[in-house]
Length: 85
Image (cartoon, rainbow, N blue to C red; front, top):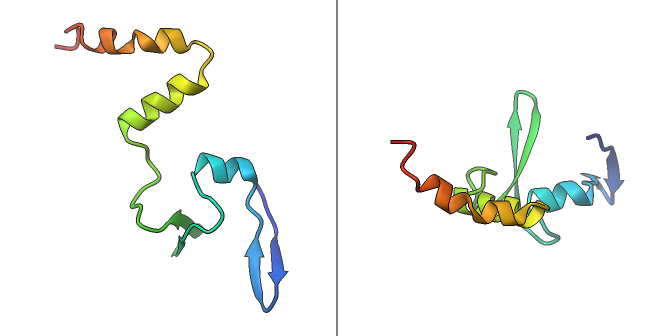
């Protein structure tokens, strides 16, 4: 995904596509941290060490987004069947 640096008053800014903001759970007014890295600039929400979801959050998000939500309901039974032991 590409964007362009634009002039905002005496500063510069970037326009971040809505889909990317939603994916990263960034909303207008959120505090962000900027960190220089070898590849460029890392942007992340303040107070969050990683962009990773907890397993329970990831499971809930996948279940809500998939058209096979009924199949995800069976996930708990499959993970507790003892086959991984």
